[in-house]
Length: 410
Image (cartoon, rainbow, N blue to C red; front, side, top):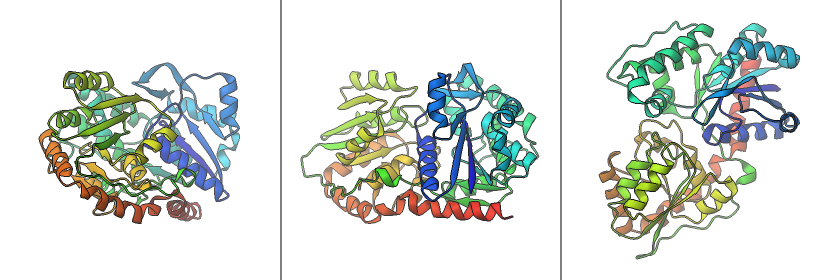
């Protein structure tokens, strides 16, 4: 098949969406498919654009000055559509449009799919309601959410209206972001989510197309060959690793407040960057936390650090729909620690510890209990090692191919 990926979160970014797209592109190409990626990005030299083009990766028209935090922003969808038709006339001849995210480039993909009668598969990656709430200052959240929702409705019809409720849309800002997500998904022919719990939330708020669950996969060529069993001996320092965004929605500050109340020996390595990076560094210094910050780091080095850790942490709450860090830990046979009950779906039973709730005191209690019972590390690592081959992208890509082939023949 000839497959076109559309994404506003790929070029110039790190994180779960980028990792997922890279792994899927590589696996699909190994299976004999022709894969193109069209993505928003920051300004680049012609030499860099040519280098990307040789990999069938193309940067769509993007804003040169305006961007969201560290995320590039596309031009208006109609501008992208005209650019694609002019510069990539082959856009009319793809078998599938495979779309990630919900902004300008992704909107253009959905609209062109309708225009050229090409099936569209929309991957709903994240909780934009929580992302907007955590990133936008309190006084601007409603204004920004209403504006995003309104602009989105210019290009895709908003037939489903969502109002405040006592479930997930418990503010006007969140309701507007759910309205955007649901109506975006409703413009596709098939919807894919990385987890069952997110599928259920989308269906609850009115997503009408069939929603399939496809967990993210780990690249085969990066799969650690023979990771050792993790063992924490009594009195030994617990080696913990963080390799998510250092940001409010990932909740690094609550973790640091928990560490301030951990009584025995631990060491935390923090890989990545984000809006709370310098705040976290100041807190760690002020409270004498045993933490080392590494900043943005190539994944090969992060993977070595994971392999040398006892425990991987992901302490977001009511935000992550999957959590790539969890399967990166599973591939390495490393136990994980989280707060969100939804994450139990992602890794094998018995391979994790979960705090009683999301508060720093509950997290500290779980970590202190682990340090008092260090043999839990060995037990959890044994389970991770037993199941780790289940996360390989080569196994999960077969499910995606089936979805694509079914859509292409209808």
